Length: 126
Image (cartoon, rainbow, N blue to C red; front, side, top):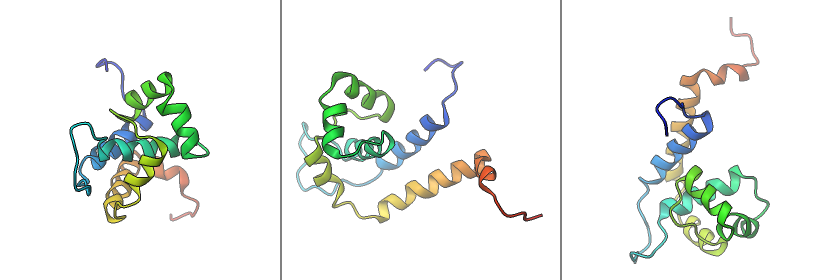
């Protein structure tokens, strides 16, 4: 990224999630060199929600099996290898929710520091 271009808020938030996703230990017993990383599965899950795909199957068709969609996953969500819909489910379901709490605290802290929470205040606390 050129030094003159600042990251958008979305890029910053995706980056925060990516960094936290990389810290989650892989629960799988055997992970070979050709395996899809847990990070890629988590970021793929984020992409499903962020891109508002109606189903994992639609995500698989639009993003994983489509060259343009795959390029978007790689550039926007830092996905190296995207899992298919079934494999995505198999990888994400066993992850304990406690690992995802850090995502929310980091994102909330970022949004709070940026001053963006002020636009959601509705009580006059003055």
